[in-house]
Length: 180
Image (cartoon, rainbow, N blue to C red):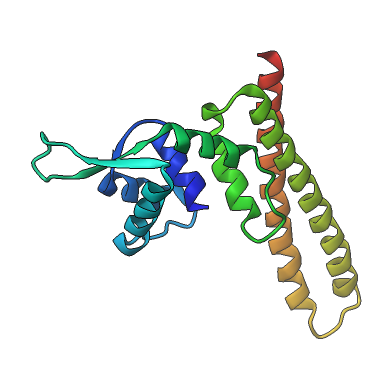
């Protein structure tokens, strides 16, 4: 996932390691702290793959090192954007990041990503609805765990509402793309 995010950030221009770390810390919805021990080995790895080059700006008083996206890195980024997302625990986060970088790819790739996201969201909404029916049955039974089922149902309704909001956004973006 860091490949997509770091390369995506660099599509907008060269960044110092410090700037990359700040952007990464703020790009995650759960606000993660990104240590130098995570970032700099990645940058070194990406340099070895030829996706980025690192240079020092002689005018920078801090002697900061800057990352520059290479042609190979741009091609790899586009490949990552075009790849379908695996149906796993990182799916939502990865699709969210892909949406952040939609402006870096052509219209057909944008549509592909948005349609994939739409499919996943619709499946999630169906699952939340099925869970709501199941929890409703348990609540109606009046058993000892009724309160527990109530909170499972309530949190599932929250998840469903969030998914519906995201789905509305995705449909709006697809509609805009159809007009282009």
